[in-house]
Image 1 (cartoon, rainbow, N blue to C red):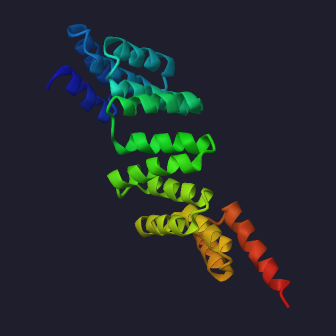
Image 2: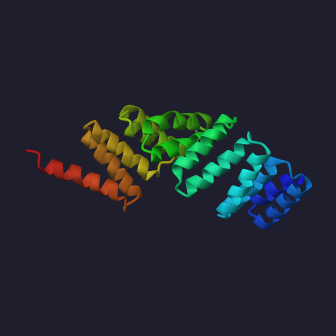
Amino acid sequence: MTKNELGIQAMQEGKFEEAAKYFTEAIDENPREPVFYVNFGNLLAALNENERAIRFYEKAIELNETTATAYYGLGTVYYNQNNVQKAKDYFEKAMKHGLKHGDLFFMLGMCLNHLDQPRLALPYFQRAVELNEDDIEAMFQYGLSLAQSGLMEEAKKQFQLVIQLDENHSDAYYNLGVAYAYEEKTEKAHEMFEKALNIQPDHLLAGHAKKLIEEAKKQQP
């Protein structure tokens, strides 16, 4: 195995000091290889050494401005620092330079959601789900974006798929309840809110929504 491969393996095993040693040796042996700087940046980001991580990603881009994974790394760091607009810009650059994996599309969708653009987020979440049909979080966020865009029938399908994969996903039950309430299917909505509360008794939104339905029932003639 190369020093770079040994570094990746050590990082995956949680041996961060060992990983740093291998990545440093890989860079010393070939200081013009941008991938080595990206991997060291990933290690530093995992250790929350964000400013150092940024410098390593920027060095990779300086060596080769088409290094898509460096842009993705920068996007992730800025997203974790709540600089969503800057994160989005870097994720878009990663996509422009050929990165096509599901995590990138998911993160672009998350950025657009945070920027109150759920309709623009839709194709990115959809693509993330297409690339990984078992990605529960991407599926759930896709459902939220569909609901926020007023596409309730499609949103319900996504929340139902989430529940099929994770029957204890309280937020999926809650949002399914909201979708049913939007369609004025109050009995079904009440059932979903109850299921959310059975899983998570302190789910405040589900508790409040369930109470509203019960109070409305009492006022009916």
